[in-house]
Length: 222
Ligand code: 6PG
Image (tube, rainbow, N blue to C red; front, side, top):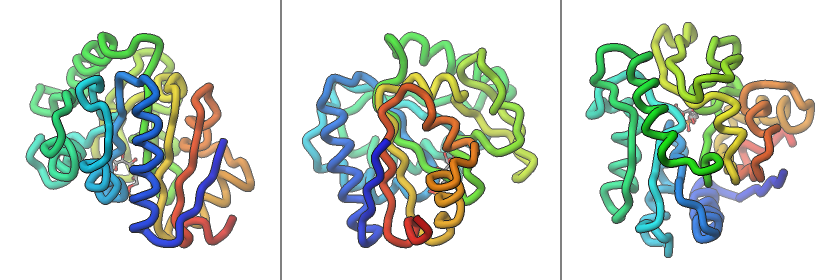
């Protein structure tokens, strides 16, 4: 496991684009796109990098249970900051289906056809509670081994989420955690210093090659 700290959010975004460009040129055929807000700047940086987009399929380790055009949709964020600006194929959960469990099952089947021996390069964020993707502490998805992609009720937000499970994420060849901001400093210490088994730490404990990319504020307690 590697940790790299950057002085500013802009340097973090550029550093993430640099690392992802290297990783995506090493033969991966899939690229998992983190949701939330942190990746936005890194996705914009990636637009101009030398990435073999014609060889890649992008997918979503998690999605909110909202319409595709909803401002909260990870798909919309990724389209605006990357996918609509580069010639890449992407597959996203269909959040217009009748219910989240059906959407998760349909999406899992679609992903099955993409992963040869597992996801390739996966970018993940982390919340200040240690969640990653939509694997929130204390939620049901955390203990699911099969299927690989599920609907997860998140009482913290009183909402459904769709998420890859721990075993699926752990099968990635490379996982890059992109974490910025002082609000993440305490939970990063709990995970990287105290080894507390919060969801992001559990996902990082699989076979994947894991790199943590942090800005100085997020790394303040390390
Ligand atoms: C989501 C993400 C989630 C995100 C973290 C960090 O759907 O929100 O997949 O896991 O990465 O919540 O979000 P920020 O980057 O906005 O802090």
